[in-house]
Length: 435
Image (cartoon, rainbow, N blue to C red; front, side, top):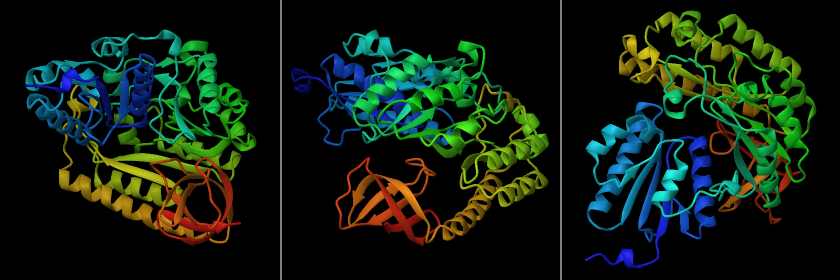
């Protein structure tokens, strides 16, 4: 006999995948809180009787993680250890019918734009007046700010438009209200996210308005850092470069996924750019914003990628010397344009190419970090671990980039800015002392 359902319901939201998913989970948690429903994010105490899994369906490894997580909670559902199990997000949007047939223990599946329906299943009302209000799953001093949903890009390898739909920009006025609310609650750093931040405003205003958005957000009292993620190289709004260079609140940091550099691969990927245009854009960015940190992501093993194509990619990384870099093995995703191509690069070759790129990047990162020894930086304090305060410079985004470890007798608080002199450097960490 079940006894859990006799108690007050408690919802545990489990998030898989990227920062966009985390943002969506925060919005869900905010709605539940407004409905006076007890809810938490990835609670460890096992007291929750209702589970909501916000899934990722981007590449094969992410899909497998989502399925494994669903199966874990499905077992708890069938054994009576939880009362309800709901699945939302990208995997649910893309494979709902298959999942319903294969995992009947799930009470209901919801897509990426079905928050009101999910709330109804949780016996909560969707409160339109809460637009943008969230219950942060990050430390309060930094927060993701999603500036648009969906994507209109035709990239051949990407299934995101299948899961997230067409690009929809959120109005500047709405984003300012969100940011002001976050600032009033102690947020110091905004991380701008979208499937494509540089497309922002084109659908809503007829022009790319990322620059105007940056200027508007930087006027908010309490916001000290604004960081740009997921900038698409084709159609890059070059007016933002002067803002990054001259506005002290906009971090000299740019996350711009490039994916490849070989012209035949870029053409097949439908990226809308070329090797020559990519080099020209990077050169312009570095000329107009001296000292900017560039982060990118690459794909190895795309269909038809020859040794010559990979060598070109390898030497591109060697030449450009990115400050931050991630690389993925190509994942053959059904219903994408590239799925019609033969996935002809063996798994072992993909993994070997990924390893070679990352080994190269490790060396580059180490060399760049060695040059930072003796330099002073303003850093934001994230947390304390043992005897160290874990901090970041403006050149580092949380979770994905490197950290600065600071030993200090002075008590430092999360969200505090301090000046630090670097005393030691490793491949992906810096060690420093208060200046």
